[in-house]
Length: 210
Image (cartoon, rainbow, N blue to C red; front, side, top):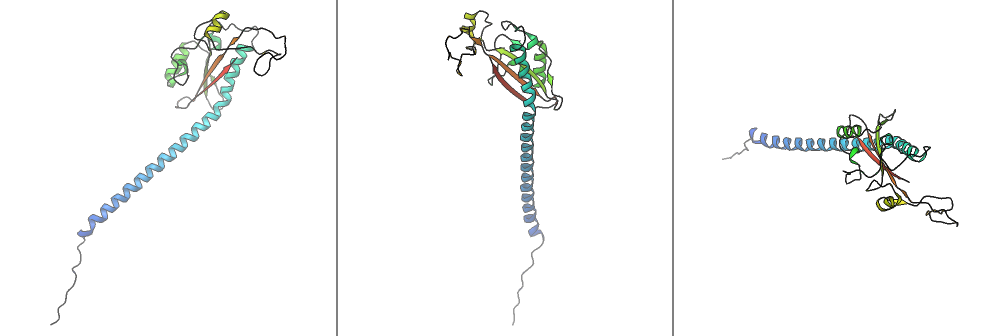
């Protein structure tokens, strides 16, 4: 007698669950890869945009600093620096409310907050770059913690440096006697904020003048 045996075929429902599970895992992996790729592209675009904004704001920022130098040091007669002057965006001492990064309160915060405070202080309107549309606002502060007027007050409450004279060396010390004896002069700080309206792009720059 010959016996015959044969394997019973698997019914389709034995395999459908496994294939579906594997397909779902593959879809999750592809979704995560797609999200990671999008975030990477967004980060790259953001970095490139910030770099382009920084480069485009350099020339206007330099313009604001040059305007300050002209107003304080090159105007004849030289303006008084012992009182606030809104026509130069000038303050006789460091302003209260400065941020940890050294940004004055009048230039800190979001665009709406900043423009409200800046305009309310009666300062000059912003310089608008014709090419990029960048808006520049700036303030000038004498680096003092007191509205000093007299020389003893300036020496006691301000960051000061000796004035540059023709007989001085590179360290401002007398190199060829006799040397002129001139009173020390305070240091001025210029803070510039650059904004592109309707965006979150903000750039700050500072310069110290004497």
